[in-house]
Image (cartoon, rainbow, N blue to C red; front, side, top):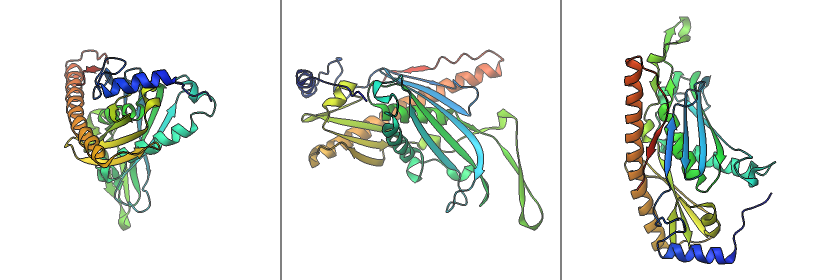
Length: 303
């Protein structure tokens, strides 16, 4: 499995640029690359989105199906995640080379969209307590890898879950405490996922030299000694923190990095949600007028 390589001279150049707040592509330490999000692309899914952060390209599809209640959670639905890296995205992903990173990214995504830290109202996914519920299957495909994959995957997943609609169900009580339900076919009655806007995004900071950057390129990732991934919701609250790689972070720098992540994350969510809601409003107005809807997505200029 060929791994990306970087020469000592390139590493020194990138490190010195980061310390001078002038990265190789002209960005400052805390600037994102150009971000493009498109929602509602796949007609055969319950929700979908495509995110491009620089040259990193991710497609997320969401399917909603009826399943069994999970043991220990009789009144909640479930979210199941899977991330696959296309062999064409990088030479590292050819053959069985992607297995490890697929598992790592899948577990990381699950931590963001499952559990109480996700903010999702899983109780609304319950159909019959203790028996049946809606199961949300989130499948992410990495089509191009150019750095900062996790942040791109989480942002795209959040947009896909915004686009997802849950069919309405009608429950009838039978004899002896048994129930049956019927799924409504009318798409107009379908409802969005409860509290989708409470979903956090991930802000990953990469320590290079004595400073740190966000949204690195592949070469910048190779220069990083340690990473810090912070989950941030729309209120600017921290939903989770994870340190990666084998380096260390000074306590004072750790505090600074965490505060930076919360500030950037809250601002980014405000911009993305405003664009998502505005884009959806335009689509709904066109449908009401009977006009064709061409999904071109929207462009979010970040910072």
